[in-house]
Image 1 (cartoon, rainbow, N blue to C red):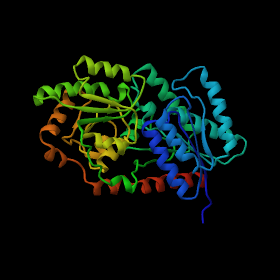
Image 2: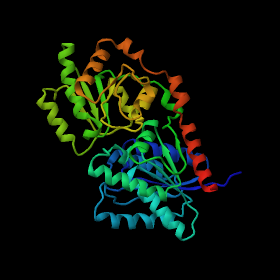
Image 3: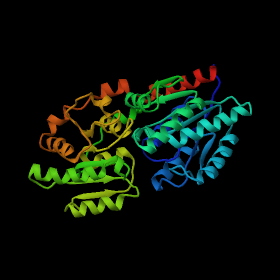
Image 4: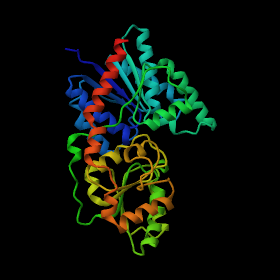
Length: 376
């Protein structure tokens, strides 16, 4: 029988897809008998995330540890890094798994420092998009990709959540000189149960962070265009939080949509799914967004942008996909509004999703990467 591992997941922001990915992984790893802990930022997230941490903390033998971490590189990083290192050193992991740009740097650097003191630590990194979203032709992009190349020497294994992400790494950073694998995000069996609509369900639903990268502004602009194309008012719900939320409220008011768009605080995705008939994912950039997988598994029709790993879910050239442009989104949204049965028929089946995106498959493949790294 293989001995249990001491696994620490390090990431910055406990919101969105990275947090969902880590929650799923820790749940599966605890069930497999491993000792698991989390180290992440204490300045992001709200009441919803606090409830999630509370529910997790009793199950994680190595605990949940939150400390301030800056999003951008700056002078405060030195103090933040030292605090984080002391926490991780105290936990004595033999697997350090970094998620996202900041978590990836911390996990690999601190794992290397622990090795200096003769600790046996596997250093793994999952980009989850992160720095790979930057343009390699900009000064910022060049700095980040140089850092990624340098960090390759402190990395034992790379884990990509989509083939798009792996291709982006090869193009912008270079061919990985270390072992790497594609492991899709996974869904739990209970997530394949359909979610019924609420009596006052809106025509369209947006769920996600309120920042331009995720496209809430494109969604609102597209709604205004759908009203013109369909010749009638349309309604929408928007679920999420972020610094740009006031800007989107103002945008809705300026376009005359304030009375037809309801804004909601973050809530569990399956709770939100009943709010809208068609889900719209208008992101400008993604890796492999959980919200797409979750919504399809719950039987929800969807319009999405053809960015990141999203086409790997629907298939290249799917008619439900659009460029990240309000006009293209409005075209697909109008089709969904005027022909619901025909649009639903374009969605991948639950059977297809189960075969490719199961949480048990994801967790098993990641544990295999841990074991192979430690064996080396």
